[in-house]
Image (cartoon, helix red, strand yellow):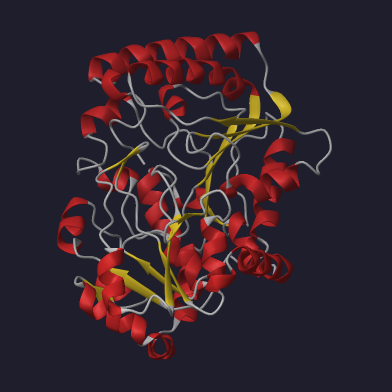
Length: 404
């Protein structure tokens, strides 16, 4: 998201960044001179995971059915420590070969090496962002703010540059993403987000619920409260490991016989749990959304996907004032949030006790229609159509705007 210390750790001084940029440009130029773009080659790259993630699975599975495509996966998390950062930097140099020789590059977040090079025009880059909608400011929208890139850094590393297209969940998201990526609005395409197609598959939902109840039969008749807080920190490092929501305090006032807290943390944090049961290997965040009855979050973008399910959402934000000052939002948070905002735990407990009333009072369909209207079960088809169009585009066609 344009964080100054995002990839380089202790090496990330302005001087070292300039040196790295010089070598990245040299290596990329050599590869570009020695090798042509392979017209059928697609590279899918991310630093968020060591293997293909939920964000890309639908796209990858659909692309595999297309004849003659060559798909390269570049998934590798950066590691902490000087040696880890050095090894990761060497890996990024190696990845430049694939970036230089692919026709289409698909990303789902900040991707450091892309911002250091002068991309050859034959290669088309599509940013498939890891989050739906937009309400927390990010990218260029938080320039010179805490957690954002400084103006000086952007002169050396123009973050979120070299994108040809970006996809979003609705027309409403085009403006914020255009600002965050410093891109023309016509290059931000409201295709819908492919991974949300999962919510429209009755077969998958049925099988998921069956599997969940087989593994955790003791939870079948409990109210399952999904707690999914936003991520606070840099790559692989959460700022403070303690949750703002204290589970012990919560269950002093709620019967553990009737409620169960499902905690799903960001991939950069250490684990995901049901109570004391580790479920991080068994169920994804999207799957937990399906089996849960209510969501508690603070500023996480999971609210956009959750709105498709028409279930209650509560916002527990004891640090709201500080967060607004440090990060800020594209919308007024009190007017935007599709549920009550609480800064103390007592009213949150009352919300949980009165969930049925809350569901009657809130219009989640209006929220999803505004921010998720292109997520309709066919988003993957539209994104794959865009990718195939780029693959079939001849090198001499030049720039054109796609209508989705």
